Image 1 (tube, helix red, strand yellow):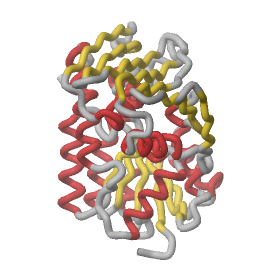
Image 2 (tube, helix red, strand yellow):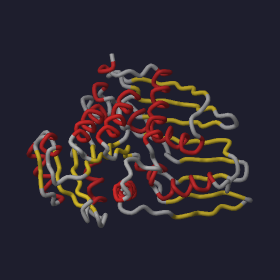
Image 3 (cartoon, helix red, strand yellow):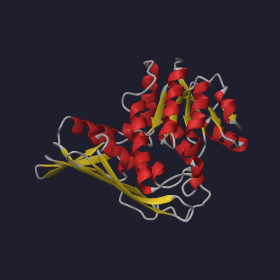
Length: 327
């Protein structure tokens, strides 16, 4: 591995801008190439952030020998195909969440990673957020006792957006579940594992996408009440209530800068600021794995990604969410 890990970026939308701004503050990272289906967009992005190459096709980036790792930030429907193409060219891949639109896609991606002996990780940035890391440790060590109740939501108003855009377009796997519902589901899974029973109900928009989903995950001795929506705003905080205390993750909890712990009739506020916008931490995990010749992360493993997409598939099955390309 070179002294610097050389990155290529596929898909140059808003999330790619945020990611690259954090990539540039990682000392051993180098932004080498960016690619878009629009050469003008690629050149503009490349000029803005100082990459060596700006490609007007993804294939050119895959074939670029100066790129070690690829970050895929395209719409969900292209994640599996582009990740597999990148891995077939020997590139390590950090793929934006959800890693695939369904379990079959995720499993194919993992097969490709193992076949090509390259690193693959789902870019579930919240898993590496310092607040989430600390909360997970507190739960594991029994600081707040046994969890009995989790509440987490993620909602904002988006019905005024372009119906052909990513959020409201069923052909692009739009709706809440894969885009934002994944976060509350992730938190319940991270802290309690896979539930023994799932209940879910959705409401749908004129384009056919699901725009509101309420979920209850039932565990042996706990419940998780989860919600995602596009037709109104929520406070976007998370609560983990246990036998000895309660943790409140401050809004917006999936990118939190700290949390509060309530125990023995007192509340302690703990600040846990992120570096940059928060993508810094998942980039550091990728670098650590690559430096140690690891093909998957122990913090967010291939099995974790399989479990998460299984839960998303389960909720979709209960609520009738199916995309046109899956028929």
